[in-house]
Amino acid sequence: MSKKQSKQTFLGGAAILAGAVAIVKIIGAVYRLPVNNILSAEGKTYFNIAYNVYNVLLTISTAGLPLALSKLTSQAQALGRGNEKRKLLRTSIWLFFALGIVLSLLMFFGAEQLAAMMHQPPAAPAIRTLAPAVFCMCLLACMRGYTQGQGNMTPTAVSQVLEVLFKLGVGLPAAWYVVRTLKRSVAYGAAGAILGVTVSEVIALVFMALYLLRHRDTAPAEDVPDSSGTLIRRVLQIGIPITLSNSAMSIITLLDTQIVLSRLDSIKGQLVSSPAVLYGQYGLGTDLVNLPPSFVFPVTMSLIPFVAAALAQHENARANRIVSSAFKLIALLAIPAGVGLSVLSGPILLLLYPAAVQDAVACAPLLRVQGVACIFICLMNLSNAILQSYGKEKIPIWTMITGGVIKVVMNYILVGNPSINIAGAPISTLCCYGAIAVLNLYFVWKYSPEKPSYPQLFAKPALASAVMGAAAWAAYGLLDRFLTGRFSAYGANALATLLAIMAAVVVYGILVLALRILRAEDVQNMKKGDKLIKILHLK
Image (cartoon, rainbow, N blue to C red; front, top):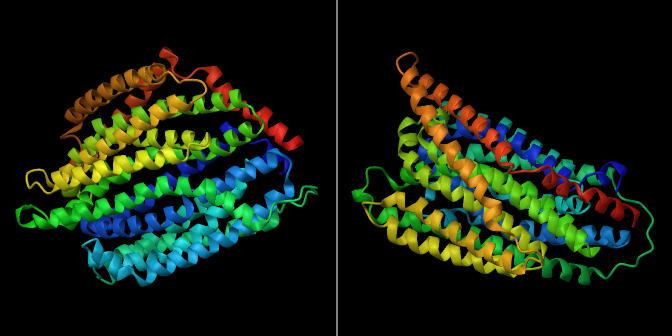
């Protein structure tokens, strides 16, 4: 590891990834919002179905194994086993290569069958177009896991930005050209938008491969690594339980999509819109709900290798401080984000989807419930990572399965009721992730060496978020009333929404300072990784 890389700490690594996520999400919004307006709710359904299939196959191959590689790489580096670290990469790359080939071929040649299984045959072109991305992402995940295991988050961050830039540069023009110029159906427009994803993964893979070639670790080491078979078994022993926990939810989500569309199809004669349109409207809110949890990902990705390295050095107290600080950071961000999405659901959707006003209005009540669910999704992701960091990889499997069963059963009952229909989907989502988060938090408390005080962690952010939500609601109501008639309908809503969001941020910022929700010592705890990294470097 270079000196520059050695300076990255848990907080620094998380900050780098969080910065990349912020850039990715901003550029991604420039991509996804126009694409959603181009494709309409129906095309959005085909786009989402392809992504759901893709996510299942991707999760199977990349959810746990890269984290296992990251953890083992971090441990090898902490113990000064340079030869073992390099052999881990050489051995693992072939495992990811084989997985990628098999899953990509399955997705490409089974596109029609997968689309038919989801009761939406027009989604087949989008599924097939996305198939090569699975192979690229498998290799990318391996390379990212290796660099992250060394405490270096920069290559991952750069590759993520490259992904979204090429997704925007290729996918948006392709969707526009197919739908507006060639006058093809939105099913082919969805495939055009998906093409940008596939191209972006190819570019990111080329970047990571060149980076690793240029920054090869050639430092001499005297350790004798285990055999390739032993190393693969160690990767699988750690990675498979994590993969199962994450794959369980991806598989259940895919099954859940199939159930929702099937139940809507069974009562389509009593619906005001087609099942594809209703599910697409629900998907507009899902895009927004997935935004805050994406900022949890940098914390979890940085958390696991640093905690693993601390545990390898028997630095349990330092590991506990890092975990506790990560908990406080996510509570600080997730609760206000969920409250804000819920309180301003309608105004935000009308701001983002001016070309799909009817769909935005229909989605607003769904997003109100999804906003609350967003809080539990963030807590679930972080608590999963904490349990995995402490060697409790199997617990998230069972909690995810429990939540998934709740989701599937509730969707079957609620969505099949004509008077509820698609409104049942966000309710089941809230119950699902709420159950998982509560179970995870219990097990974190049970197995943590230092028992976390949840009231202390969550009470102040919850209070501040409630006041912030009230301020946002009141500010929007007053501003919208004042601006209506002075601007166009869209202009009045847009200005009122943006000003209400700014007011909410100011109010929340003041409360964070006044209530001392995040104190200086919490930041210092996250910076404790400096000393740990120095130990790793000297080793």
